[in-house]
Length: 206
Length: 165
Image (cartoon, rainbow over all chains, first blue to last red):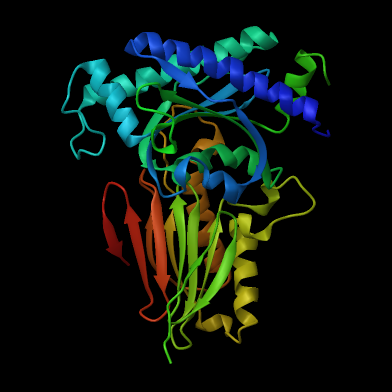
């Protein structure tokens, strides 16, 4: 199928609705104001994909889950280490917590996993309500590692049919920390190629 | 004359070659495998960043050869032949094939790291190229850089530091 600018607008709206709900959840969890940017929807090649969020070698905290059901795909929530530390310190009330620590505390990891679970849940249930499509996310996995190593797992399905990928990327940031690349969290949704038709059909624009 | 050393960068699902004193590098290997083929005497090496085990998984007609273990290694050998390399002189070092996330699903994509490693080894065997060293598996991302002068593969991970193989 041919992707028109109307299609891209629809995907933007999906990123918008999903991330807005997730940002609201995050804000009420932390008791802080969370802002978001206008979603980016782009057709990129794999190399460009690896360079999102600061480059393939940048160490990040990544939450990953697979979506099954009417729409299949991969979803990531990526946080720069510093920002993830700030969130988790506040959540578990432990100023010493640090993801780069070699003996990182279990409770912090568990909190991060739960944070990922709640945020991706808000994102996907908003998406499901909006489209009427059934989405079944897997339990999210957590990794603290290079961005490229994390994101490439989302490219595996897609790489079997294409060398390009449509990425729905929405950034969120803490209001008082400011809006610079270093502190932005990213919700990255990568629908599998066959799933776009289901999305567009559900919204009446196939 | 001043000789400057360059680092040839290889992206995901790409391949390239390098001559001493330059080095060749690929970053952010997760489940992907970096395969280095090198000729010790000529000090020439090639690197392919493999994503998938088998080209039969490809569902498109126009294929990027470097994406798959089987076609990627073949294409790299062809490329090295153009530089006057005899394939029987080639040796291999590989790294990558990690499992970044632990899932309790039997879906094949979740095991892609180990499958990539198996496929790379099978293809090397088929081409008669000895595997000299490997750092594969685990659950850490890797950045690798090969120096054709020393024939050492430098591997950097986030949690386990740096080593040479």
